[in-house]
Image (cartoon, rainbow, N blue to C red; front, side, top):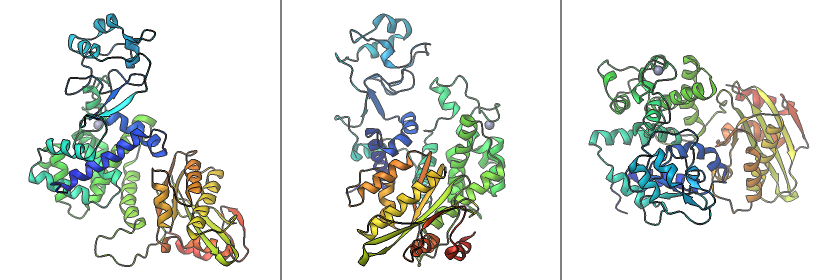
Length: 467
Ligand SMILES: [Zn+2]
């Protein structure tokens, strides 16, 4: 294809996913991410008005930033507030009164339709207003001021072995695409730019990730250090230095830490929850280990994956599911087991399935029955683990499934909408032994649901899984 820069092409491809999410507001993924992405877009603009925020959204034509410059006015929120609703015309008097010359000229230059239309998000890079990977890539190349050194940093970032959301977050932080108070203040969304944690310094990238006391202590506790001179570099230069001088730690540790700092900052600001340095340290170390374990990612040559079951992160409950089948008798059985962060059993079950059609369908049924049981028991944050890669891929997909198991997939996706979070994770068989044993005993006539317990027959297998 002749693409010069693969990492930029990857970003342009990722943006395509984001675009799909924004275009299909009813999908599960969209609902989860929309609230976040919608605040952080900068290359998209709005056309319409019902939900377009006057001071926050990028909606004014004919200028680079597409943001309103005039100071905020009380009582005016969405672009709709600037129109006479009956005549569907701009409220010229109101606009001239509250907006500066430039803004009011730009607003009044936007033609209005006779009847209200839905807001529409359009992409600036193409005349059609639709995102294309080509135009996204072109835009990234034009923005390219990167030196060879910078490129190395991006290369290290994109090759890190951690989930793409964590890498993308770090990438966004490098580009300053995150809502720090400094950024919010610049956009006149926040009255001040100070860090909410220490309330003494401006919350810049350097402050939040490096200088705020919590961050300082966290890096120290993780054993990540840097010379004093590096501590006065810009955020990007400092991060580049950390990527290249890993010492005893890994680049993944740095990336997860950046992500975890932001996560704990948000928890503090939005929920008033204070994270401890020790707790966050454990969380980060757990992330580094869990990802490499559960996804069977090996940094060396690939060997046969022997993965041990690993407990979920604190606050999550892991549910392992599996199926066993007797095709000749058209029978299949589900086995599932819920455990907490300490490997403690929260519940288990062996249930016969209504019919047997295929192994894949049996795996899907097991997942469905397991999720139903977990939700019934009141668990809120789930990690569903199955050794069927096909099933997990389908559950993770945002597109509608069109295979033989599409109805079961849709059922599971709709079930998990009842709870705040559910992640679907593939595990090799060696990490899914307990669920496998439960399902196998279904064939021998064992059947039932157990709360905080497992049937005696599988006790030894579950014990062997303990961390
Ligand atoms: Zn601070």
